[in-house]
Amino acid sequence: MSLRRIYFTIVIFAFLPVSARAQDDLALVENGATAYVIYHAPDAPASVKLAAEELQRAAKLSTGVEIPIRNEPAERMICLGDNPSARDAGLTATDLPDDAFLIATKGANLYILGKDTADPPKWKGWTSQGTLFGAYEFLERVVGVRWLLPGEWGEEIPKHAKLTAPQISLKEVPDFALRLLTDVQDKRPPQDKQPSEAQRWLLRHKIVSQVEGRKINQGHSWDDYVSEETVKAHPEYLAVSAETGKPWPCPRHKAVKYCTNNDELVRVFTEGVVQALEKRPWLRCGSISPSDGGAFCQCPKCMAQVTTDPHGNPSHTLAILDFYNRVAKAVREKCPDRLLGGIVYYNYMYPPEKPATMEPNMYLVWAPLNYYGWGLAKPAYRDEFERVLVGWLAVTRNFVYHNYSTWMRSYNGAPLPPGLEILKFELPTLKKHNVWGVDMVGIGAWGYGGPANYILARQMWDADVDVDALFKEWLRLAYGPGWRAMHDLYTMLDARMMDRKRREPVKYSGEQYEVNRGLIEEVHLPVFPEMERLYREALSKAETEAQRKRLEMFGDNLVMLHYNMREAGMLKEPEQSSFYRTDEAYAKFLADTEFSLALYRNHGKRYTGPIWEREWRGD
Image (cartoon, helix red, strand yellow):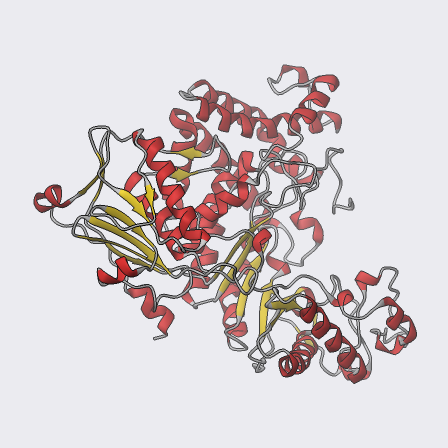
C-alpha cells in the first residue's frame, strides 16, 4: 500500500454521543456576541490570513456577529495555521502532504491547520494552502456554507442564531495532488475590469486557478524553442512526407513538426528549452508537447517507430516518448530542479504495448482526444478506458489526466447537461489507480454549467462523492422550490445527449465536440417547448432574489438559443415563445450581457454569430 493510500485511510470525523456533545460543543457565537477570536501568527502566509478573513466574513453573514481577528493567542480561539499554539496542543502539519489539513477541538479551542507555503512561493503554481482549505471545509461542514456559482448570487450562507462547533478530529487529504478546472471564465478578458469571481470560486472548492500558475505545463509548444530563422536555415529538422521525401507544408510556424530522430534538432530544441527555463526562474515545469495536429515525420527512422493503435490507426507514441526522454535527460543535466510536461494525445494517445521507462523529471499528460466531447458515452471507449489508463501508468506514475470529457463548444446558448453517467465513472476510475493529477475542462457558461462544475470540483478533492446527491443538492439550493422542474429539464437533456453520443461513429472527428446545427436539431430543438415550460415553472416558484437570478442566468442562454434557432430558420411561429426578442432587443441583450458569467466564452472570446455547420472554423 502506498503512502498516499495510507493518508486516505486516516480520516476521522468523530462526534461524541449526543448526551455528552451538548456540554462540550464550542459556542462560537451565542446571544448576539462571541467570546472567541480568530488567531493566526503575525508572519502567517497570505493564504492563512485569507482563511481568517473568510471565516470572519461567513460567520458574520450567518450570525450578524463579527469574530475579531488577532495576532496573539487567546483563552478562546479559532487557531489557524501550524504555529506554536497549535503545537502546544499536540497538533502539527509537518507530515501532511500538500493541501491537506487537520481540524480539531482541544479544550475550548478550535484548531485548523495544514501545510502552508511561505510567501513568496519559489515556484508559481506549486503552493500548498492546507489551512485555507481546512477553513473552507469547516465553513461547509459546520456553518453549512455552499458556493454554487461565482459572484454575489452564487453563495448560500444559512442563518444561525447560535453557532457552535462540535467536538471534531478530522484529517483530510485530496485524492489528487494536482487539481485544475479550466475554461470556467476564471481568466477574464482584459477589457473586463471586475475581479475574477470564478477564480475565488475555484479556491473555495480547494482548486487553484490556472491564472495562478500550473504545476505541470503541457500546452502545444514545439514552436517555442526553435526559431523560424533556424527552421528556414535547417529544413532537415522538419518532419518529412514519405511520399515526397520533402517537409510537410507548414504555412504557420506554430504548426511545425520535426524529425524527432534528427540528433541535431534534438540538441537545438533542448537548448531552447533550457534557455526558456532560465529566463523564467518562477517556472518549475516547462512544456515540450508537439504542436497540434498530425503530419509527424515519415522518414525511415521515424516510420520504424510507428505502430498501430487499438482502433487500427497509425500510432506515433514510441517516437514521441523517445523524444520526450531524450530532451528530458539533457534538460535534467543542466536544470536538475526543473520538470517537463508533455501530452500524450491524438495519434499518440494510446500507450506502447511494451512499457517504456520515462526520465524522472518527465510528466506525461494524457489528453485522450477520442474521449473529448462526451466520448466516454460511447461503449467502445468506456470499455477500453481503464485498460488504457493502466497501460499509461505502467509507463510512469508522473501522470496527469487532462480531458474535455463533458465539455462541448456551445456558443449559441444551447445548454449542456452535466453528463452524470460520465462523471460517476471517470474520476472514480482515476482515483482507483492512484492517478497523481487531474486537469479537467469545465463548462464556461455558468448559467447552465453550474451543476457540472460544482460536481467536478468536489470530485477532484474526493472522487467517491455521491454524484446524484451532489446534483440534487446543487439544484435544491440554487433554485429552491423550482428545483424539480429544473431537474427534469437537465436530466431530459442529459438523456438525449447520451443517446446521440452512443450512436455516433467510434472514429473520432472534430465535429463530435461541437454544438452545431446537427446537434441542436437533434438534442434541443424537438424539446425546446418542454424546456421552456419547465423553466417557466421553476421561475414561477422562485422565493428569493438569488433563486430568480440563478434561473435568469439559465434563461439568458435560452434567449440566445431561441434567437439563433430563429435566425437559422429552425422555428415555426417564434413570436409565441417568451424567449422571443426582436433584433433590436437582442442587440441590447448582447450589450447588457457582455461580461456575464452566464453565457459561454471560449478562452475569453465570445462568439455571437450564427449557428455553424459541422466542425467549428472560427477564430
